[in-house]
Structures are given as structure tokens and as C-alpha cells.
Image (cartoon, rainbow, N blue to C red; front, side, top):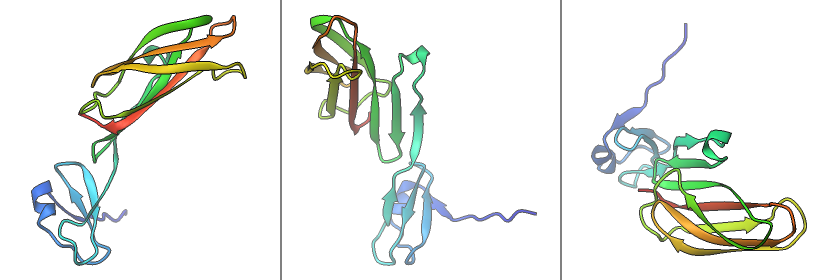
Length: 151
């Protein structure tokens, strides 16, 4: 027979008002996260937990995303580049961001040693527009990554 272990649990308000014993764990039922207590800090320390994932697949153009219980979001993917010169592309995020204060990184032409460039030209909470270029004669990929607080 298996043994079941239960830890204290409560809403975010209840956890915020609770001072647990040193090394005690509690579960926040509102935010679906764990808290670690030190015996003195009211509310303890929130431990971010992965709560939602989008895995890269052909159906989502190989975009991926992770959302954590503390609101942090990481997401990224590929954009097909042109052959030569500058092209504009729109990135649609799997998870909306809370505002436009997120970081967005892009790197073009990752498949070989040729040089390329990438510029972020506009940001919204649901995506971004970039200009990317390379100086090869074959279609290359631009890799993008963003992180910040989700909506």
C-alpha cells in the first residue's frame, strides 16, 4: 500500500498571512504554487512552478512556450528568412505578455557561418515585428526568444 503525504494548503491570502516553521512547505491553491518557509518570514518564499507548456511542433511552426506560477513567461521559435536583403516578419506569441517591457532576442542565419542581422521594429503584448536579413543565396532561419511577465 502506498503512503500519501499532504502538506498544508490554503489560498494566496491565507498563505500571505501564514508564517510556517523552518523548512515547512505549503501549497498556494490560488496560484498553484509552493512556498518554502523559514520560521520568521510571513508568507514564506514562493517557488515558481511550471504551469503551462506549448511544445514545438510542425502545427505551431515550431514555437514553444513556458508559463510559470509566478507569472514569468519564456517563449521562442523560428521564422523563415529570405535569401538576401532585409525582410519584415511578424511574430505571434503563444502566450500574451502583460505589457511591452519584455525582452526580445533574435538571431538570424543560425545554420551556417554566414553573417546576418535582426532588428526588433515594433512590440505589442501579443507579438512583435522584426526585420531580418542575411547575405546568402539560400533561405535561412531566424531564431527568436522572449521572456517577461505574462498577461
